[in-house]
Image (cartoon, rainbow, N blue to C red; front, top):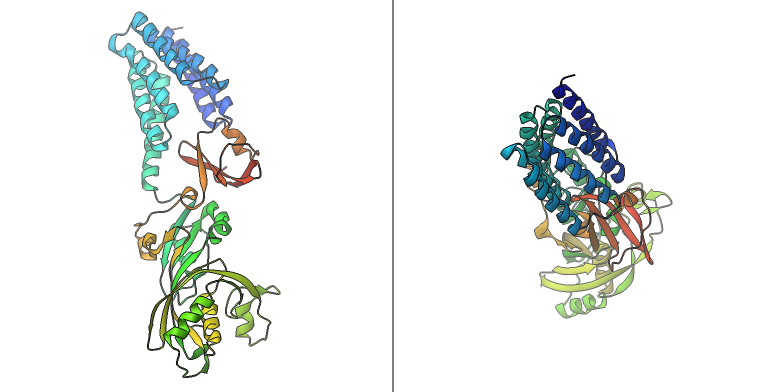
Length: 448
């Protein structure tokens, strides 16, 4: 049989191991498949007349043995490269073409260490292009076909990465909600824009209210409770002498009076509520009692004992008081109703008070300056956040036993942070949460 045919058959067998390796999820099994690929390609190169191709593929097999045993340290990598250089220079029989496998050896080391998936794809294209030139020169046609397929696959992957840079399945978006929309309206509209039903938010804003609404998408919806627990800042306006059923200006007027309040009295009331206290939930709210939302009782004119909950008014500041209209800034805990706080200030002063405007200016570390409107999102003119931007996490890149993380095993790790975010080639794999002295799986972020 013709040596070119034999070399191409062996090269085809080696390339098939590359295909098999691509489907293996276990890292060590994938490396073993790649080692088999390199071994067959080295034999194919030798039969087709490329001694340098034989040398460098065989040396890469040795490198993979070290990798499987987790002993591929940086010094060993460079020893392998130095040996490749010495042997290639001594035994190269193809002139400049013969140095391409050596160059690829060095590129492969770079590819292994890059954290960016986009950079990895670009390096792979360059790597495969050099092998393609070498393989066509020695008439390794079957291997050349696999080189071309890999290059095309990488180009398509790069286009997808660039095109979908704002289309991560898991994302957090800081939205600037406009008045007139419910929080659910905003979530539904953004879900329609992003073509997903797996979407939620981290704290309801009334239709009257504007400002920061943090929207979570994909597996980040499981973070809602974590993000919701942060403090929120509001700028609110209210007027004295008016009480409505909804506790804001959109509701039905229940009571009125013309009592005058002095600025001194108002400052005293504001100072009084700068504390933790038990606040009664408004009846027009989505809080559930006996399995039903409170606003359902209100709409049916049913009487119900309104629940009370402890809230923390961390900061409360008078910004303006003019013509019976008050503007305040407040920093409050999760579950605080500003409408109820305003009602309580009125009751403390033996009068009525109703909210007329409300803007959430901050939630946790994110302010209204960081927020995007629905129109921005429709035009794809927005930036999304990751879990690392929101929670107190320690990012662990290219963890040595990433399969252990993928399987949800509990681990010990030296970190003072509450969460660990594991990444592989800049892609999020899993979020772990501290539990005493160990970390446990909190959310699997990688698509399985």
